[in-house]
Image (cartoon, rainbow, N blue to C red; front, side, top):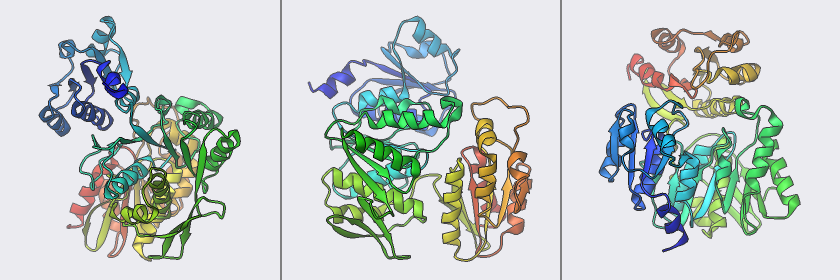
Length: 457
């Protein structure tokens, strides 16, 4: 029995509380494929649960202490309340209760692990890497925080010894992994409800880079000040190899942009054409990171560059939702000012001189309070910006914090009510050739199909 087999066997029978979540279901799917007895429950009967049941998992709808059965290890989703009856029963029984990242880390034991971290771009870059490796002839296992149309799922067990995973920094759980190759797309102040200060965010990424072994490699974006500083500090310690990617002359993987259809990836060994189906400079940078991973794992540079042309995007990452009256509607998960700016820049490149109209829903009261001015500035890239009220997610309201903190700073838009009012606001301004973009990490994603329908699409 290999060390990896022993690590999984030590978990015994594993029960997932909140198994229907995109992250939890992914780990459960891979564990089941690797021979671990899996069970799980969720409050709702979600489609992915039927897939897990077909893969051999024992599934229950609704939470009940009896669902634990003979479980020996429990994995609890981050949204699970402390008074959840299954969690309470597991704690009373003295069972080990793991965070999703800890369960994923145990699943990856013995593999060559590629983790992708960063304030923005994790899901897209992880997806690009996975698609690129599959097209290059490797069959990696992977766990991604979004569904990927080109892959059909967000997580799967592969035949090779490579495991690609998105590493979430929001709660510090990315420090549970032990990567051989680590990508950092950017480092900015975010999730201050957890970290408290920007300095603490940067320190956590230092700890993440320090997880790499002596023969590992850090691949960091030289175009982002935070990631560049991390690369410089890591290189200064001399403990692991560092590759920088970006448009600057000192990038180890340089993005040479000669206009549409004329983009190259340049390294010390040559220049390789880059053809992407997804728009935006940020996606070209993500592709440069994926290219660096492929080369680091032994993929021929020309093969890695060519394979990136097969990436068609990740769910909720500038995802096309439909068209009506000549108006194209897209949806994007962007929920930080930098992400909003990148999504709108991509939309403007696709619009080709026509107008871009955005429906934005702020995510979290704390993030709105911290970045209201920056959100308004980013939304200024659009021709028209409508703002919904804040999607609270896990937070309680903060007195005085509403979407008006953003909307009142706009010169190109206003606050808009939910439902029909928001749909009519967008369809009322959009003309043939324009782009409509719904943006945010909350339920704003549901508006895309409604807008398409209202446009007659």
